[in-house]
Amino acid sequence: MESQESGSLKEEPLMADCIFCQIVAGGIPAKTLYEDEHAIVFDDINPQARVHMLVIPKRHVVSLDDTHETDASLLGQLMVVCAKMARERGIAGSGYRVVANTGRGAGQSVFHLHFHVLGGRQFEWPPG
Image (cartoon, rainbow, N blue to C red; front, top):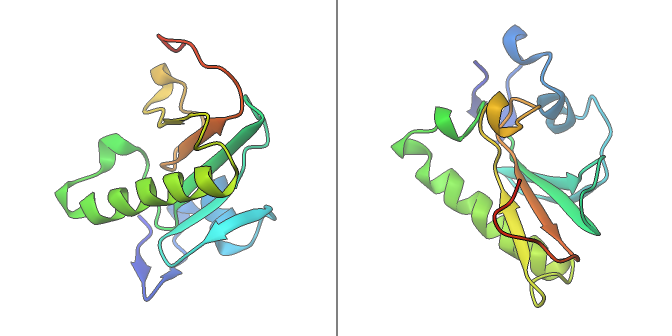
């Protein structure tokens, strides 16, 4: 597994195939909307709403199911970034949705934890 030291990703063979790890490392270009020492945000390449961003940790984590109590600070920071970006992109006032698909059965297609932040259209309940 990859680990993070001093804000930089260490290369390890198991994560070389992870498209999001490649984006974090700069190997695949993405229009970065926000970046800090723990997270990076970019637009989804297959948007499902007028605004559809992905908020990902720089450290490789497969899914929410692979997090532990020691990840609470990182998860909290990612949620703060979701809200910050919703405000910056002008969708906070009308409402937005934050989604983390966890596992194939829930629709996770990239196995690097990521939060979809969607807004700019009406959503229904239940989702799906």
